[in-house]
Length: 361
Image (cartoon, rainbow, N blue to C red; front, side, top):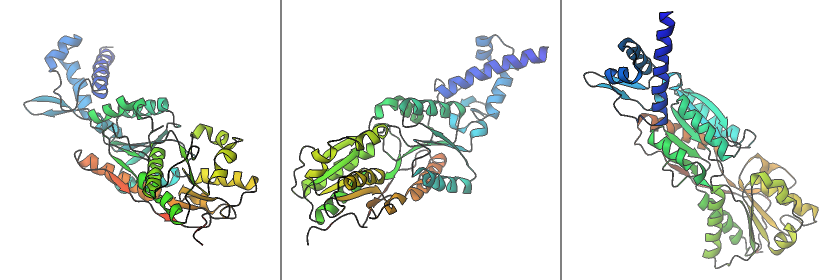
């Protein structure tokens, strides 16, 4: 009976101190209260307190310094998850997901790390749950594709907390400029600029732009598009830029006046991704508008979708496999050296196929 009672007591101390460490109330590097102070706080014996501290040390939450006492370690270094990386993605069905994972998993496996995957479904509240679980359970590091990354303030407090707790974390797919977290991403501003410049070089001066409003990458691609127009002395007209959200993708394509108010007034369309580009091509085909003879279309991602249809889609190339590999490599670098530089920006490239007409003759 006494053994069970002692076990219950030390577990109480263990659980409460662990919560304080994971929550950040006891910060990394902070000295733990002495055995005497913990005995006074809980009114338990020295044996019980010592057992709780031994278990916290064993599970990697604290470490002892001879002659100085016990100190808090970063919670990501704790216990059975010390060699596990958590990847928080948007959707399992996203056409880049399997390639991201293949790149990440290859590097982690080669270095003896396991991969744990969770999904936010592009919902900040679900992302918050995933981040909280990662912090509470402990992990070696986090790879994060931010939900609704154009609205970064939703979980800014959690990004700041991750940084405060010194948990290695790298974002992919989008940058969080005010969170202080490193990123491994495509240079989306340059990608948008390159796509628009490609169309301009082909003689197009009336160019629509269809972007995802909730993605930070959408904002950057649009900014690049604007920079290209400005550099060519082209003034963007009302109605050329259109915005949609993942959740309203189909509804956007079914807008009755999309063709009349936008697509009929331009000679080319730059789309946020290949999926939207194919959707626009489908609308134009139904209206008897020929691609590229009447309207040119350029996508973004250079995914397998570019090979669908009678006309192969011109697109801006991303390389998710290499992005995944680099993100995993940089995260492992952060785990070894928390002060290292983990940012990486991949440069885009236009892959020319059959959906852009040269108006120069």
